[in-house]
Length: 130
Image (cartoon, rainbow, N blue to C red; front, side, top):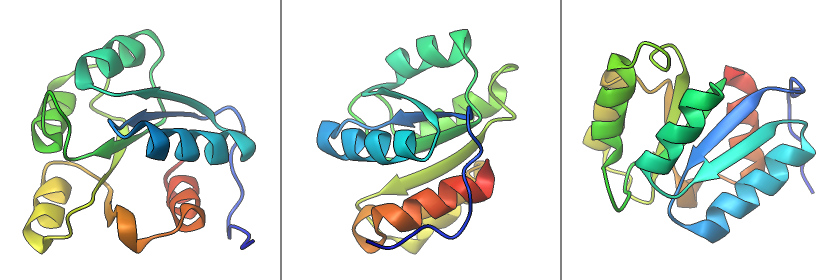
């Protein structure tokens, strides 16, 4: 099992917006093992309720969601006085370069394609931005 390169910062809050419960649970389990406090939501409305109560240090967000697309969510987050400073790592199962560029232009600090990185690489990305 590969080790991650950097160390986690215990107590940091990570929120995951992901409608694939299996993927969300795997991420949550691995990030919890690294010392992160992880919450997840399957849609934007549930996420917003959680985030307003307990501002996260980082958001992991799928671009393709049932109620909003990630691009709309990025726009909404940047307008929110509480959440606009929170770093967002966007991801998708789609790897179009224009989607990656659009997410970054809308404020995402990073973007990845789910099938192209391991859970350990994801953890390294989280550690880089927390």
